[in-house]
Length: 331
Image (cartoon, rainbow, N blue to C red; front, side):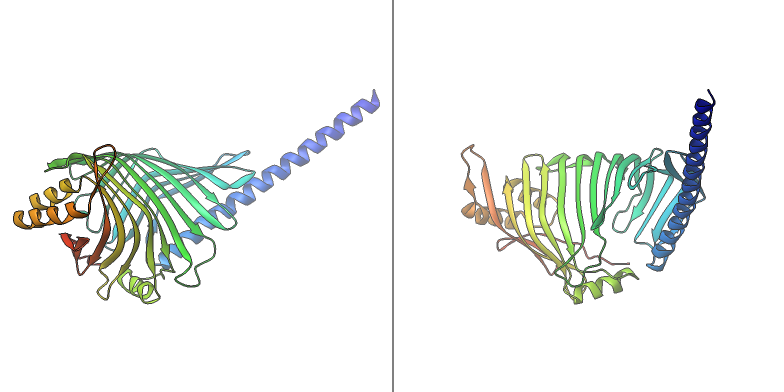
């Protein structure tokens, strides 16, 4: 009987020690996470971003960590501004490398080149901190801006832990898919619904911190490029696929050398004519020129495969100019 009592007392002692150690680990880690948030915000501020939140809460004791930030915002001058009423990250107390992230009350913001504010109903995703790189996968639901709406935007961003040493190294990998974009007004020959828009690309080289235009100039001068592994657009009968290389010219305007594969290129030319990008007469000439190099598929559809270039503000397929790129005033 005495032996059983001693064993019970010993077990209770072990449990008390374990509980104390667990509590000590949790509160120590919670303080480290709070310091980590402040250090991250300070780092972003040193890179030119304004980062703030009105309230932070760390909970989840004892088996998890739940970080909630209320009234969070990020901005960089006129380039962009994002406001999130509430963002929550949850991770197991025993695996702080994988975080489940939600923005249940949505988000809003502005971006350079977009006239109307961008709003989202909610967002959910996951952040994984790896040894070689870190990855974020986010799904944003219920997007709206200037009368246009979209069902879902799925993004994936991978950042290597080690900064690129040259323009041959990947500084950032990004992929995104936008589904069911409905425009406020239909576009002639294409309609008002973009079924899907997607891209998968690598940003080569290091973009240094600092003011946007200056940082981009350094990145360009160091040989920085964007390698587009795949870009897809499905809009009405038009299906456009592209891959190739993008960069910036001496005036920090986009240039590109791509290969495009297009189903129903006539719809693309008709839309350009309707928008006033090219004249009706030139539209007929461009169609005839592109028809000569297009090939009819077994299913009866016509597929055009040709170089697509962007240079001096003009978009060309083969030798035919089909549109213009608006001048970008980087901020």
